[in-house]
Length: 472
Image (cartoon, rainbow, N blue to C red; front, side, top):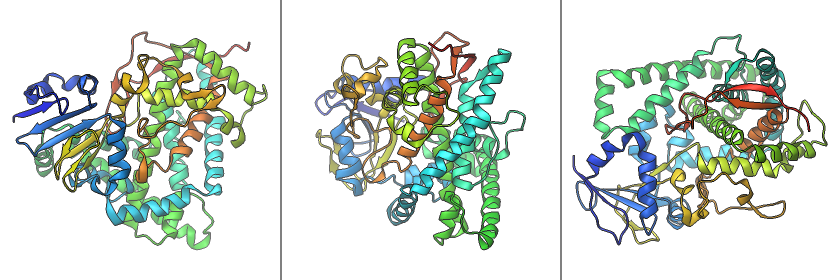
C-alpha cells in the first residue's frame, strides 16, 4: 500500500505515509498532533491511492463547525464507520444516520429534557456514592489498601448507567460480588470493535470475521452475551409494564414509544456504552491531574466545602451541583487535555470545500481530533499543555461559555451529546463527594499512558492509596 500526505494546502512535501504510519503506530495521536501543529491550516490530508482518495484530519474550528453544523447533511458517519461498530451497536443512535437517527434523537431528546429524569439521575448517583463508593474508600483508607480508581469509576459509572437506562442494578461497585457477565462482555466488545478501526483496511477484519478467528471471534462471543443480557431485561420490563407503567428509566420510555425489541436493545446498548466509558475516563484523568497540582486541588475542595455550607453532607442537592463552577472548569480542563473520545469520523456524501480551502471528495473520511485540538497553541495559547482550570473563566467567578467547535469533546451542532448535562451532574457529584473526604496518593510516580480506544482510558489503570482528608 502506498499513501502520501501533505500537511496543508500550501505545503506539498509528500510523505510515504504507509511507512510513517507503521513507525508511529504506537504514538499515532501524538504524531497527528505534531503534523497538525506545523500545518498553517491546522489540517492534514492523507492521499490514499490517488488524488480523490483522501483521509482528512483537522483541528480547525471553522472546518469543524462546517462539518458538524453548516453542512451537516454532507457529513454523516457513513457506512465505513457504521460497519465497524455495526455488530456491537447495531442500529443504536450513535451508529446510524438519516431518518433512523432523527427518530431516535427526537425521542431521546425529549426524555433527557424532563425534570423527572434529572431527579432520577441525582437519586441514582446519590445512592451509588453514599452506599457503595464512600464506604469502599473509607475501608481502603483504614486498611491502607491499594485501589485502582479507574476501575472504581468504571464500576460506578456502569452501575449508574444501568440503573438509569435499564432500571437494573448490576452491583459492580460491590467488590464482594463477582463482575456480571454484561460488564465483562462490554469491555471485550468495545476493545475488539476498536481494533477494527485500527486495521489498515476493512478487508483485514472482515476476513477474520469470515473465518471467526482472533479478535473477531471474541467480539462475536461478547456481543452474544451483551444481546442476551439486554434482551432478558427488555422482556422482563415488558411484563412489568403490563402491571405498572410508571417506571422512569430510559428503557421503559423507549418501550413506551412503541419500538420493537431489536431497536430498543440497540438504543439501550449505545447509551450504556456512552454512559459508562466517557464519565469514568474524565474522572480518572482529573483525579490524576489533581494529585500533581495540590494547589488547585486545595482550591477546589475549599470551593466545594463553601458551597455546601461547610457541612460534610452525605448527599448533595441539585442546586449545590449547579453552583460548582470551579469543579466544572476542572473537568473541562481535564477533558481538553485528555478527551474521552479522541477523534470522530465523518464520510462526505458529496464533493465539498472546507473553510480553510481543503478539497473534500465524495467518500472521503473527514476526522476532527479533540486530542490534538487541546494541544494547539493557536487555540489555547503557549500554555496549552498546562493544567489551568482558570482559563475557563472570563472574569471573577464567571464561567466562560466556550466555542463548542473549539472544545468539541461533546460534539456540537445537531449531534451534540444529549447526555452532556447529565454527565456533568454525575461527575460533579462523585468528585465533590470524594475530594472533600479523601486524599489520593498515586502508587506510581511516572506519567500514565493515554490509551485511545473507542473511548480513551489510562493504560494499566490508576492505582492509589486512599487517605482521609485533613480538615483545614
